[in-house]
Image (cartoon, rainbow over all chains, first blue to last red; front, side, top):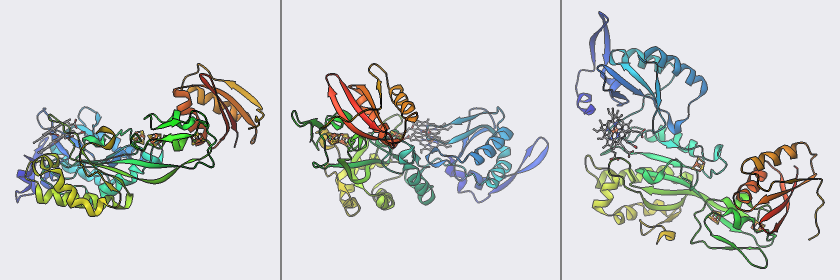
Length: 324
Length: 78
Ligand code: HEM
Ligand code: HEM
Ligand code: SF4
Ligand code: SF4
Ligand code: SF4
């Protein structure tokens, strides 16, 4: 495993390339964003692009670096939104890292630590978006990227219940929600909200056309708010639906539903406390979902209660109300 | 409620998303601020989506009427 030589005391060695001696710095490999390819001497270099967002000026510089170092002149868009430069000779690492440093581009990571967070477009530019997923991903990348854990730890942000960033499959996922409230006085009974709601949570009164709202069916998407011509539906509160312990891979595990309506400002605390619980209860090589299966979700929920009280904890920790 | 007078009208029955919205938008662009456009939309996806998009563009839906399997909307240009 990559971690083996990270512990080694020698960090810089000389290697031969085209008859010339070049330096090789193991510190470059520490982050783990250098992935061995099946081809001899060839590596994939995974760049750190939180939320899959890249400044265009930087992208132009990255493309020059990719063109310079990729032996096959190709990049790949990874499943976690990073840009990967393929077919890089390991003897070029030192020079390539220097070039990337010059443009302020960092390399991503592998292994048992907090990974680069992923995020959809969110409320910045996606019409469905309820939370600023891009800003959140940037914050998480700056504050928590690389934090050591027992296993990989993946965080993602979706802007709404459509959940493009698949928070159900993350170690820790945050999905935007909004709670609608209705004002009877301004409502004209036009029935548009009952049409806009795809969850059958709003029925129209047969005579007045006014909405009859069923909170048990509502998934807090805000479509009714966005559709109402008279602003009779308003946002009572925005927040994050927090999911814990999901994963992909050979043995997928759907996340436990932990809390709803957690405000933006409490997200760092949710992450910190979750990592703390994981540290106390997990073990080496165990994803947090497996820890939950072993230790029990109640332990996690109890530990998280102080921060989950900023919204609403889902005390059963499993099925959401509309799934019971 | 008294009917609001429309300055122009578009029948968008049978027109799919998002073309129905784009047609509405283009029509509104030819009109003056304050004028009213009447559109007729199918039930289902069109009525789910088009009103939201009209609002997002900053226009105001001033009247909605359900007529059988379709909706008659009046939109004031903003
Ligand atoms: C050289 C080191 C490594 C490389 C290059 C690497 C690369 C990758 C890549 C590219 C993915 C898919 C990411 C995506 O969705 O875009 C992935 C997923 C994964 N890797 Fe690694 N990995 C490395 C080391 C490790 C190690 C050491 C572990 C565990 C001990 C690990 C566990 C996993 C798991 C569990 C997933 C799937 C997780 C999920 O989506 O829930 N990887 N890895
Ligand atoms: C060339 C290096 C690697 C590549 C390209 C790679 C790629 C991937 C991809 C694409 C997935 C599926 C992830 C997803 O769909 O979200 C995955 C899963 C996984 N990878 Fe890797 N991986 C690499 C190295 C490693 C290494 C070195 C390890 C462990 C030492 C590892 C452990 C895993 C595990 C355990 C999973 C299953 C995920 C889970 O349990 O949640 N991978 N990998
Ligand atoms: S999850 Fe919602 S906000 Fe994010 S991209 Fe998908 S539809 Fe847009
Ligand atoms: S928030 Fe979404 S699910 Fe809830 S009532 Fe409104 S449209 Fe329906
Ligand atoms: S869309 Fe607004 S005005 Fe129309 S019935 Fe619903 S709440 Fe009332």
